[in-house]
Length: 247
Ligand SMILES: [Zn+2]
Image (cartoon, rainbow, N blue to C red):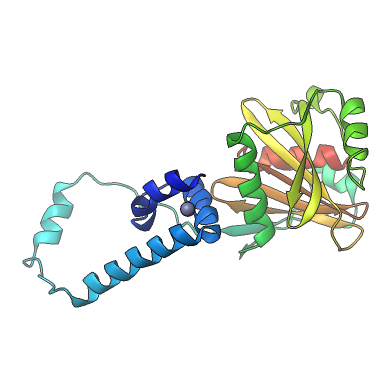
């Protein structure tokens, strides 16, 4: 998001008129752009002053219900609280995972910065026309290409027979770590699979998060952090992760 565009959208942003992706991209710009941030804060201060200091004219009694009854009924929108679904594979490991058993589900609010970060990365990769540095469905090309440029050697598989063809790979940056980003497709959807070496346990079971309409699954494998991000259905992303994790 460039400065001019971010400035143009400032009022719409402050009014909450934009969709989640635009909001996120703008937030990232405003956080880094002092000029925009100053404008945004000035706008918010002015609004607050208007709201608290202007005389409030109350609507005549019954107006609200008259308007409401004149409008067609609409279902209430779902709550937009970010949530996190944690699902475990159980102690039986891969066999249990493939059998799809022992899925434990719990819903906890998750303002996980990693999740926000990779969702923004995913969106940016599709908008910035920088989805792949190496464009090939051949995992035997992608893997050495990445290994030559990164101090890690992530799992690279072509899952075309399973309906997740590999498109290519690129170098990326996730939370201060140089990361491999593998790009897969599912029908018209893009899946970004990030892998990077962060501190943590050797292995950790996958956990599913949702943010701004995107599904995110994180896990640890062979000492690396893996994160899959996409707008495909959660069940499809789980299937994808199972395939990536299968030996
Ligand atoms: Zn700006």
